[in-house]
Image 1 (cartoon, helix red, strand yellow):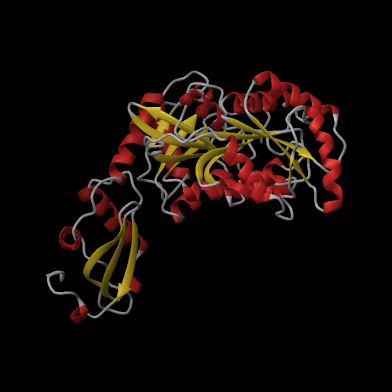
Image 2 (cartoon, helix red, strand yellow; image 1 turned 90 degrees about the vertical axis):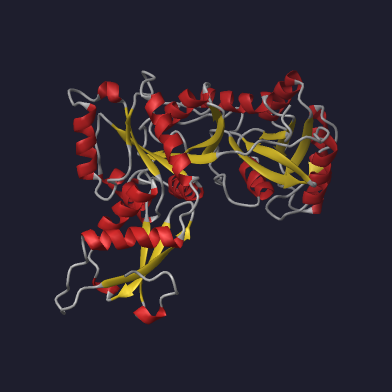
Length: 450
C-alpha cells in the first residue's frame, strides 16, 4: 500500500460526485454540470482531509447511458478506481428514493470488498434527513448526511473518512512526484493513446470519437528511475465550434493544466497537418514561456514525407518555436518513444541547471554586442545595453537595462535569446527578455559592460 491512501468517489450518474471532489480538493478541477455523464475518466488529486494526506479520485457515473456509446469505457475506469482504492465514498442522492442503479452500485461494492463510506448528498434541509435513512437498505450502515451545495455535514463527512482511512505509514509518504507534463493538442490527435502507452496500461479512455477526454487527467509514471506526472487534457477546437458549456469548461481546464505544468507535449496529427487550432496553441505556449516538445503523432499515416521534411514544414507553420525540439512518433505503432523520452529528459536536466551568476550573464551580453550591436533607429543613435541579471531559475527570464531599449527590434531580441540559450546550455528552453530603460550611471558596481 502507498503511504498515501486512495479514496474513490463512486455512484450512479448525477448524484454530485464531481461537486464533492471539487469541495474536498478545494478547487474546481472536475467539471460540475447537471448533464449526466460529464465525468468519464478518473480524476486524481492529492489533498488533506481530517489531518491526513490522501489521493481523492472522481469517477464517471456507474450505469451511465452515454450518447457516444462509451458506457463500457466509463465503467471500466470506475472499476479501475474502485480496485485501486483503500476506501470508497459511495455517494447517493438523499433527496430521492433508492434506485435500481443505486442497488447495482452497492452490489458491485460489496463484491469488491473495499471499505466503504455511504454518503447521502443533496439533503438540503432538515426535513429530508429522516428520508435519507432509507439508504441503510444498501447494506453499508447509516449514511453520512450532507449537502455539498450548502456545505452542510462536511465535518461529519471528514470525521467519517478519518475513522475509516487505513493507519498512517510512518515512513516518507511518497517520492517526489517529478516533472509535470501536459499533453495538449486538437481533438483526436492521440493524447490518450500516448498516455496509455507511456504508463503501460489503459489508464484513460481511448476512442475514435473526438472529444472523449473532457477533464485534465493526472497519471504518475516512472521511467528509468525518474518520476513524471502526465496530464491528459481535453482536445482543443475553435471556440466557434464549441457545442455547450461542458466543452467550454473542458477547454479552460486544458489551459489551466498547461499553466500548472512544467512541460507541454504539443501533439500534432501527421496526417492532418498544422491548422489554426495548432497555431493558437503554439502562440499560447510562446506567450507563456512554456518548455515544449512538438510531438508529431500518427507518423504511420503521414505519407511520403521524411521526418526532416515534416519538421521543416512544422517550423515554417509555427513561427517562434525554433528552439522547440520535434519528436516524430506513432502511438499506434509504438515507435519514437525513445527519442521522445530523451528530449523530455534533456529539457528536465536543463530546467534543473543552476542559475548563472550575474557576471556570466553580462559576459554573454558583452560578447553578443561585440559581435552584433543593436541597429540605430530612425532617431539617430543606436540602443546601448548596460547590464543584465536573471529573474527566474526554472524558465529563464532576464532583465536587461540599457539606453533607448524601446528601439530594440524583434530580430535583435531573438539574437540575444539564441546567444543566452547557446552559452548557458539551455538551448531547448524558452528565454524571456525584459528590457528596462536606465541611465548608465545607475548600473551596479561590477556589473557594467565595457
